[in-house]
Image (cartoon, rainbow, N blue to C red):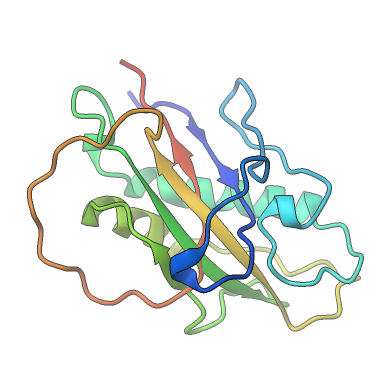
Length: 181
């Protein structure tokens, strides 16, 4: 049985990728149903681009929902009980005005330590089909950063050493998953 997924979108300050950390109050709070809601400011929605005063709340809620839908079937079974693998993957990427992810814009900013978890998060962004940007927004793209969180409240399950995965360029998007015992 699949469990609900909580998605958290967090803005990280524009620092070099290796130095970025999420402010404690920057994540959108998950509701009891496992859905995420966005805060009013662009920064709390995970948007790294100047929004030019355009309200992206509804758009980001759509992006979160679409990414979550793409992510769920890609998750390895080991994120559920009894194994309950855990980890956080951070991906940064750009969405063009037409809703497509900009070629070459995806960047893996932080790995989970488990290739299967990293690949599921990466695949969620790659396979998502987003709506066009709001018409009031005149920029060429928006840049987002998401964290994909798997069972983050517990220490990571031990995993065997895997070969280093191929280089994955692109933006960062963060999502959360918590399995039930």
